[in-house]
Image (tube, one colour):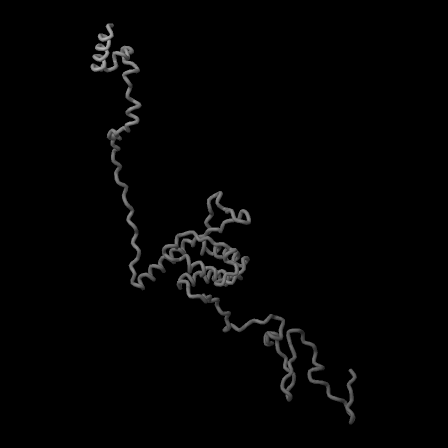
Length: 272
């Protein structure tokens, strides 16, 4: 191999590590200090930043856990919040689903409404100032809450799925209820809150026992006074007839003694 010569004569020294034989990919030449020679390092000693392996974070550095928190005045009970956040942790729409869960629990987890059906209307909840979600995001969040068991879908009776509006038939809002486990947790949280306020828990209303049915008395009503007009219609006139035959009208007429005496005197005066 021909080497270059220096200007003042003589052969220039070869660069450090140039004439050493190639030792494969397992050995990498790394330039050392200025006064030192080249150092041969194995692949395990090379920093992974310069190797073919992808970058891996250090073992002490861990990803932060998802800890949702409601921005409004209402907050879920601690047990329900932890359970729901753990169920929604691996979903892309976890923030939207958690916001919808807080919104529904705020208005429907009270003791009087806990067991009622929740009419969830996606069109009404879209762009709501308390949620800030579109109709598509509300639909996805609702499906996620049903999958994790926070809500349970309640199918309406056949024939009641549509309602008449000014624009025509429109599908009714789909009814949901809190899942069984979450409903029990809400009930316990309501009881603890009432105890903390010092208010007694609402007692169950006693179920009245049905009284034994009495035998119905015969409907014997007192005879009512009949109007005079009906009495006159029902009474038969003696002029019309009797049971054994018709009676002579002349005999039935009352006799006037004064009139007959006057007629007799008139006949005697006339010589009749």
